Length: 463
Ligand code: ARG
Image: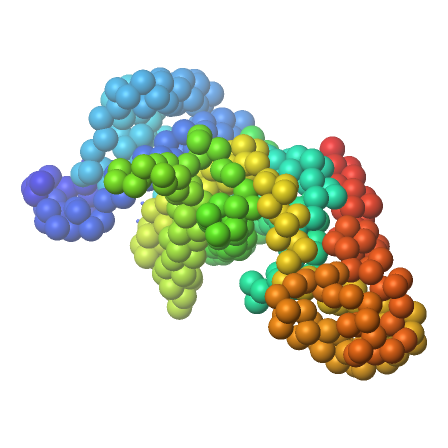
């Protein structure tokens, strides 16, 4: 829409309205309307402060605060008409306030700018997302703890290079992800604490000559304190970048687990059965049950990383203080947040619903010479051989078993003795998978007792 009337809110020095293309590139209302509730909360806090400090009359502040509530209910009821000519959520709300309460509306913007306003709104929005992120992580960790507890002593193959390495326990594998999501949780909490400073009252960039009370607005909005430098306060988007970077790391963790679920649920592995609720069928192959949720979670990391990179590029090289470039911050964060929350919830549901195929896990745990290290360790411990020699001897025994198409415990004592004469019957005691995992009692090791100790520790942390 090309309009020859200049903007109602800032058009005092303009003789003509913007070109339609200008309006299209400039307007952010199509997306920043998601911050309506935050915008209204910020304005209500600002108005109360303006009255408390005697900058505006109490009656005006009351009218403003009431009018803003009316607008909030219009927005929530889907009755609010957004206008692209009014650019963004801030000016849409203020213009409507004028319609609702008349003259006092014009006093709201005293000692404030859209620059501190948008920084405040966006921070409040991102802060809610940090809280949702924290909740999603805690729920996922509880789901993983449930799996770990059920299968603290179920054996499965542990892999390096996706080749069978040593037997581990199902509980241990689940708890590895608890550690990852636990670190995510601590990053989220750190970032949440760091970002909780109020930009409101920084005004356009330099502060204001009005005797405002920034502590009062900070407190009203749940911030710990006002941000200490007005230039920084209006141009800082670290909080958004910290959200995106913590989200990126967490999405990366989700993608690794998702990948394992895709592999594990395949006919070749059959380590887990995913529930019907979190699988889909194929329209042509009736036998198929596809792990679509896991695949999509695996993919989400792409757009979340992308958002992080995009906003880093937007912010890079921007001179102080506010530049309109920063309007490009929101869509990236909105998209990343929506997809992160969805991925966390889907993963939590999948983990709660999935069934570990205990027998398949156990069968796989014993194959692939998974106890070769236990054999080498026995040669060291019992025969006193240097580990390098023990490694070599074990390698020969693995070669022998491979040639005969059997596993290590299937070799006879005589065959073993043909490689090293001092080997005794005792060796068979360490070739079993259960023995192997039970023996790994070092702190953080895979022994069920260690896994149970870690489950207990995490329950304590989350209690
Ligand atoms: N819609 C703008 C944004 O998201 C609000 C701030 C505009 N400030 C200004 N000085 N034009 O960044």
